[in-house]
Image 1 (tube, each protein chain N blue to C red):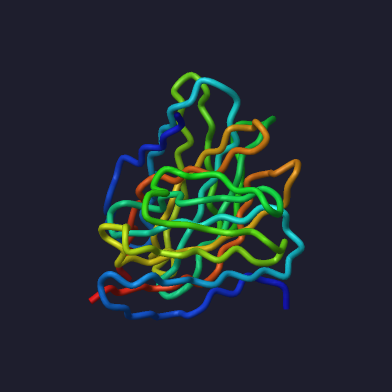
Image 2 (cartoon, helix red, strand yellow; image 1 turned 90 degrees about the vertical axis):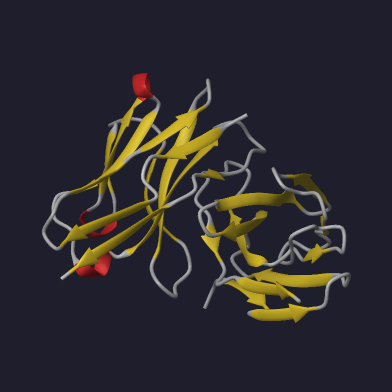
Amino acid sequence: AQSVSQHNHHVILSEAASLELGCNYSYGGTVNLFWYVQYPGQHLQLLLKYFSGDPLVKGIKGFEAEFIKSKFSFNLRKPSVQWSDTAEYFCAVMSNQAGTALIFGKGTTLSVSS
Amino acid sequence: DGGITQSPKYLFRKEGQNVTLSCEQNLNHDAMYWYRQDPGQGLRLIYYSQIVNDFQKGDIAEGYSVSREKKESFPLTVTSAQKNPTAFYLCASSRAPGNTGELFFGEGSRLTVL
């Protein structure tokens, strides 16, 4: 069965600091990888996704993630965070086989102080 | 506007009562999903449906039931058999077949069992 592990439960940063949120998955086959974000009071929305090709993917609001197949990792990064990045971030994985569903990690809460 | 509508937003029920949460989408998506979100637990998959009149159990299906009689509707019933029903419930949808895994979420329903 697939599983997703997010390393940090709560990250606290000051504005302009760099961010890296860890995500590892467990699945032997080919997967599609995602990061979702949930801003306070808002519904979940897609931040970025990886299906194939360039392992470095760029998403909205300056976020990027790198897929490292040998490490089963898909870490999220941002060079300089803003106060508005305060949110909960979820890594998710789905097998590319038809009929499967998206499995989420437990989430990382990011708090950015101005 | 296209989207996913969940109702009610807040719901209080007495222990032992069944409760049905509504989820409607007008995105013409084939696949629909129910997740449960608890603090520190991330999103856990309850049930999902790839096509009308078909659905599969997720990781925590016990104590829940669903139906998919129409493409746009995927109601979730929280039965009295669910041991810890108080939670935030999220409905989502995605295109299928050829499902890319990109889910669109509703705003959620918060159920409190007294």
